[in-house]
Length: 537
Ligand SMILES: [Fe+2]
Ligand SMILES: [Fe+2]
Image (cartoon, rainbow, N blue to C red; front, side, top):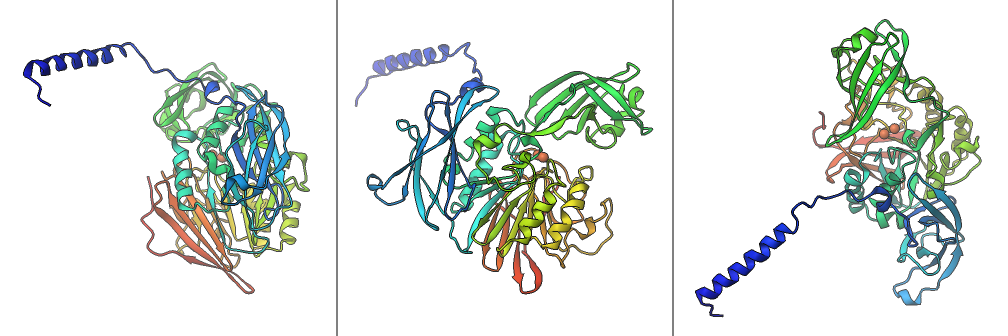
């Protein structure tokens, strides 16, 4: 095309007018946050589709989903998968529907259990109300024999789940797309009754939860507290070891790019005041001089220390008792077995999968009551392998986070039955036991030196998948530790071998070992060689 200079100038003028309109038309515009209740509103189209097992994984599969409350009935179509969708031989199963009122919306949860399935078979299913359907998903039943498989284990997701956990889940899925299930060791979310947080938890895995089942054990953040006293009534310890009553006079969470910071003010028994800033790890990041008149501690005694542990030991005067999140049972269908209390339904259970018994214990309540139940499911266990998961670790990498009660109540039984692997969370760091070098150990409670006992062979793991990361203050008992690192783990079981790999959020291999079954002997633990240097702060 041949354009004269005059024409070029006209075109330039027209373009500059268009561009200036484009610029002016957005002046004064400000982005607004899309409201949380709108972002998580249920509709007649199913969402939060999640596969779980409440019965035998070789012959059953449960699925749960959510709709708005205008959808009064749910149903599922299921067929053996084929490669010609229009020729599927569909069976229709009616759902059980439960009304659910959350903090921001009303919904119906629907649940179906597919029964009498063929083992080791690929099925396809969809859920809906008969008119509004999901797409067809695939799932595969377990073999009814001991067969090789992998699963993915996540420690606490908990904080900024949508922003910072989704990519960890998705990287894990890319590493093990044929995983038999994902296992979540508690603290899936931070606020147990906030629907938006559960919405974020479902959104990260999205369709994957509809094709790879979920096994989960509850953490302390899946528990609300009931019959609690007012939050402003607190107890503190003074420097002279006296328990005093203090009153919280202000409390304000502030979002920062390092997570939530809580600004709070307190008044002591003699009317002295002090202001604090506490990070979302519970550590004191600011305190003013007023603290000395109340407690005898100076600022320097408290800065960087936990608000809830030594030396202040902040406690609510009436802490109440734990109550499982109202979301747990409507949205998951875990086994309801012969458990010692109604309160432990769907938190205390076991599932047998291709030669491995997976046991979920509830480390939040009724710990003593679970002991005979645990003994029973370990005594009558036909599987070669046993993996136990519960949230609070028996060996904690935080010196102010010891769970002595669990060590005293549960460890003797785990020892007696030589449980192979124990998967936990809670401490927002990584620590995995193994044979450690003989060297003087300091700052460790009784029993920690024997965290790994070759005569027993149990390996204990604490891991974290979310972005809230605590420091490690007690590491000598662990073979491999990490700070400031979000991780996921892929565990493969194949006959006599269990192969464990921990990966950083980026997919970089961080830790690995193999357990080998031996006749009449405890497992042989074989450490991987050439692992990268440890991630420390
Ligand atoms: Fe946690
Ligand atoms: Fe926790």
